[in-house]
Amino acid sequence: EVQLVESGGGLVQPGRSLKLSCAASGFTFSNYYMAWVRQAPKKGLEWVATISTSGSRTYYPDSVKGRFTISRDNAKSSLYLQMNSLKSEDTATYYCARRRYNYGFDYWGQGVMVTVSS
Amino acid sequence: DIQMTQSPSSMSASLGDRVTITCQASQDIGNNLIWFQQKPGKSPRPMIYYATNLANGVPSRFSGSRSGSDYSLTISSLESEDMADYHCLQYKQYPYTFGAGTKLELK
Image (cartoon, chains in turn blue, green):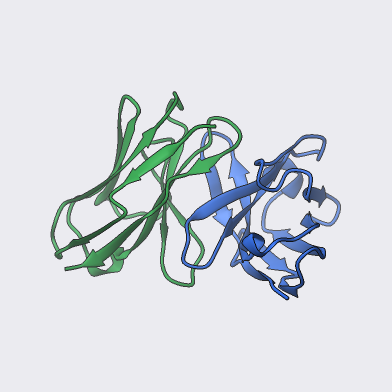
């Protein structure tokens, strides 16, 4: 059974950093692109980052480019999101998701809440 | 960036109704579109992938179609468990972009 379990969320002050983790199981992690997607309270979904199977290629929207870094450790079947210079508008539930070719995101974690506030 | 214009933003319907939600892409995305269902406090659940393919475990009353740059999710006969938010996502090119979402409520 595919499982994605996020951790590392919490309350953080504006301008500070936070690192999210996603532990994957039930599939060969190194064979899949992985991604982070977020959802601000009562808002729609926003794609945040994607990483290739080896980690050599990463993709971000302009809203987080230069502040967020996606990475992975295939030996540990783990995905990460380093978030720096956090802003109040980064407040959201962050989901880890598996990307399947010609499918989109086929499995999602349960999400982890990040609140940026002083 | 590719804009995904989703409509309606909300709708109310009765049990047994036929319901259609639409996303219009601002550029060619081929069939690289997926529909998600999301219930309160839950993660998004894939419903239709590659525009017209039913995801595993999804009831056959759900279907997806494409007409040019317009993509539709149709529920042929609404059931109470279908009350949820629905989102479309284009994964043709980066940045991936979602529609704004549709809130489906019971009339």
